[in-house]
Image (tube, rainbow, N blue to C red; front, side, top):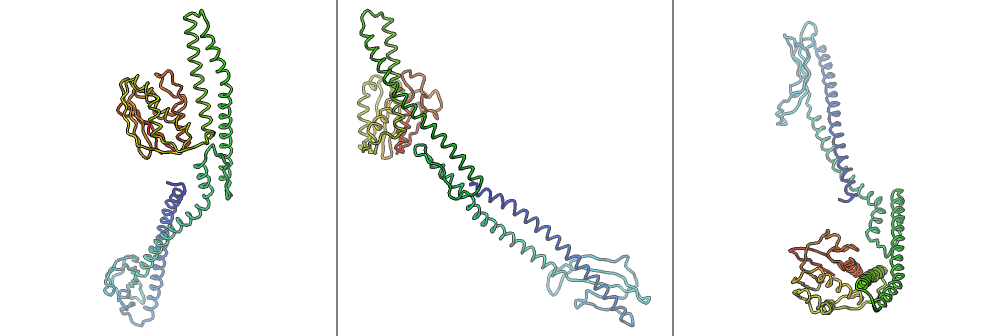
Length: 418
């Protein structure tokens, strides 16, 4: 749930019960006031009844209301105490049971005992309470809707700079580094957020540039010493009277230098890819490129007795740099051969959306999520430098492709989708 919706929901959840509680308490307060008012009316009518009794010369029964419920009757038996209560009486005119307030009391005048019954219809009070309940309900409904709409509109205005920052952050790329700008960030916290993000991204970008420059410069600087070492090793190997141990030592040094040279070239290549230095592009038929690379690796395939299964479309064209396209396909095929088993299978399938390369092999000795990390390699492959799949990942991202790895039924699969 979005932050805006969540805060609005919390406000509504808190406000509606509070308004409901206020309405509930108000109901009882109003009802109490109505009851007190009714008792005052009964008391007034009772005093008026006593005046009526005193106005008559002779004692007699007197009807005080048209419904005959309020009356003055002659009595021989006094009440124990004054009765004041609410009761339900069926009203023949309204044809429903209605609540009445009743006051019964004795009054003695000129040695004559009278019983005064004052009965008042509470229908108007009940209707008033019902109206109040309906009013509270309508008020609560409109308050909830109004609160939600007003809060939503105001929140959208207030949180607009925040969402703008989120949008800029989601589209942020190191290669196209830009500072976070906010035209209407008048809120202090949002200004702090933009300031912190700018400080963080500027530091990251600065470190990124320094790291790339270091890798590029280091790779360039290493090329000359490596070339000198290789040349001197070639001279040493041509020397006469070398013992077997000396030849083995020189050969070991040469293999190490070759590996170091390969690492240097790969790091330099990664740096160039990240710097977007491969600007030349042309339409590449990846199907033909796959076939060409398979011919280049035919000896390795035969040496491992690998069964090849191809299902390629006649053409899969993509706008790419020819060198990077060649590296992409070559590394995927080389990886599937290197980590295949003797007598294994290699399957390549393509369609309009991309292609997949599958090979038989043992499970990974590390989590599959680390497959494309630099220098992450299978310890069983001594000659690997652990950068081949990192190159594949970088090239794929450069051309907005997705590379995905799965392992199932002793088969490794790399799927490249456009």
